[in-house]
Amino acid sequence: MRARGREIVERGFALMNDALAGKEYVVGSFSIADAALFYVEFWADKLAIDLPEHCRAHYQRMLARPVVQRVLREEGYR
Image (tube, rainbow, N blue to C red):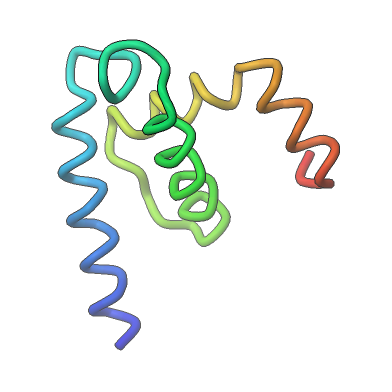
């Protein structure tokens, strides 16, 4: 079951990785889609699931946003 779950997650990240190629954000400019993807990237990172190249770059961009830093600090994650 765990292996199947990891396979599903990795397939989803592969799709998002392709969608992010050549863009900073999912639809070109920042949107709710980026917040949703960040949520999944955040927990993948916590579970030591490797993010593909463009997802990793997106995750780092999101982590650099001041509001994200503030929320993570307030919630005790930083």
